[in-house]
Length: 327
Picture 1 (cartoon, rainbow, N blue to C red):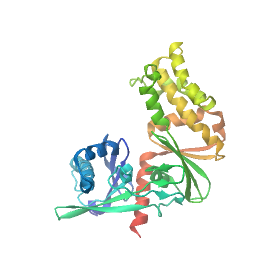
Picture 2: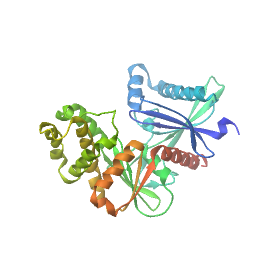
Picture 3: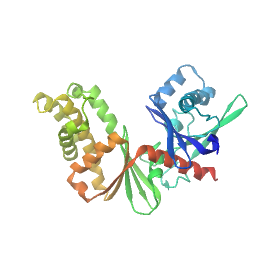
Picture 4: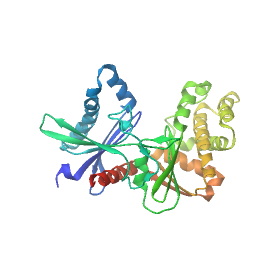
């Protein structure tokens, strides 16, 4: 079996980051990857400076091509005609090509998501398929990329499940009867960055990268309890008070603030009446959210499962690609 048939390139192109995975289709194993900070926002700004609309796809593809060449160089392989599947912000109005949001509800096998194929030709000798996956929307909210992760962890069944995807803009997505029926966005990560970097609290928090999370569990749990029990606008000022009254040092306060915002985010899940929860996250966020759930007494009534975000991305993209390839 040739590389071109066996492999596929799975790309998660977000607002602030770019990640490409070379995947063996036979077992969905990641055999190579590239990650960098050239997200869609940065790419769009660079393109807008001196390029015209007709060059947009070519400009964005150069970024994709550089990542492919890096993988080829590291693995000493030829990926010339291997297709690229992309989810995330690449299908937004800032991305490679804007695609209309898919309406919510949509099927959890990905068969009715809106997708688009782009064929990129190189000197008339070969062409590469770029397969863009759209986001989804209802009248109140949107997502781009998270729909793919949910599809990746879905294993059938008709029970009502709340999928939580932590991040800059955390998503709480409801699935039932093999459909995604709702989404709510929480600006957890963005609020943390704003408060920690651009507010009066910026001199009260600091991250100690030499110490692991285990050193600050107590402060984090205190923050979770505060965020889940107190008005967040009032609770946030307690970070400043912690410093003024020397209750916590800046390193502990960093995790206290993080816990507070995660606690405020999770408060809403107990209003949904949904007991089956699946958290899709990377290793760092899995540790934080697991501890946050352990801290909240109400969480003892929940059926909680954690899934790896990279695995979900690959499985989701391949499911969607296969469903549309057969059309």
